[in-house]
Length: 476
Image (cartoon, rainbow, N blue to C red):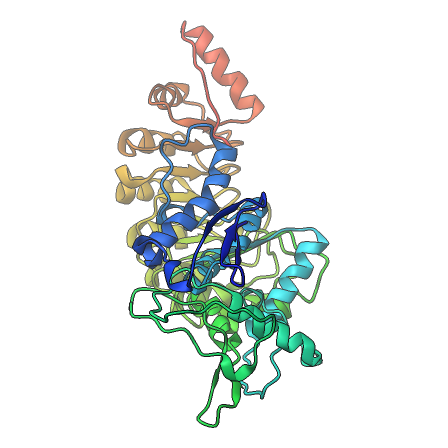
């Protein structure tokens, strides 16, 4: 970290070596590019996502520091790197905050649950502008406000003087002030000597303290937290919770967040036993969700999905796996009111009769469905033929595991019409025994899921016909 000594006019690196000296602050200027939000955002995206990318691939040649990573959560290691960027200047702080708060993920351990509860409380708070004279809270720096530290109003006057003095000594990396001299020779600074720095450039942010002077030369403190809070709410795009099971207060926390997450696009709740309709409904009122995942949240009912169909007309993905209370009633509403839907998963292990041909036929006719999960549902050949007819080359993945009413007719239709099919899961569909059609799928490199009995039957058929089939299953 580089240290700037305003009293001795030196710049010293982290090894204690003096790099250069300067006579006034106006010699400290940042390159024009580093004052542009677009450039800073690209730099910070690289910091945030290159760490995640390097963990999954040794080849970074295809890495792109842009919006293509928008839906990827940021690792804790990347967050620790980003945290340091909060302290550079106002522009870097704003850009860093937007990246850190864009996609939030909380997993199953107790510490992450506690972090979510704290985040929800902060996210739902709405402090108003405050004025104080002349007490400056210890925790009023922009970086500390970015993590919502509470103001401490019990600081001594000495601490207040130090806080004020620290602002005077803190450089603005983008300052283009034309003042002739800003160096100080004394170790203390009276409040009347401080003035907010000037900037001639409209493109640069300056590191200005959150207070100013009125006409009577009295110090007025401005609480920046409302601005920060508004930024958090405008920034949040993805919220993910995984396996939050034994903590019942998660419903209240979700309601707090949902009320103010008016720009949220992705809500992903995985295997959260305590999630109910009341947990989800506040998120739907804003109408901006494009991805809704409630996999394993078995208490959710048709009321939530019906409301999603009514409010979120741009819905692209709906995942309600293992939600046994979801039925044809709400899926029909989704089919008729969400024409952009591309991914639907209503797979289940019980209550199979709740999802039938009635709603899936409408999904085939009225949406842009490309990925469809129907495992364990009460689906017939009629429904599969309709899907193949309406979606044909647009269908990419389908799962019909445990749909035991399906026969060879379904497989024939998909082989003939769904030429771009990449995944076909048909485990436990024992009425399907046309291995010639299955072999055609294997030839097209379609990934197949078969049970042990089906695999044996397929291998025996291949041996009897002098053929070798390498059936490959999709990665989970």
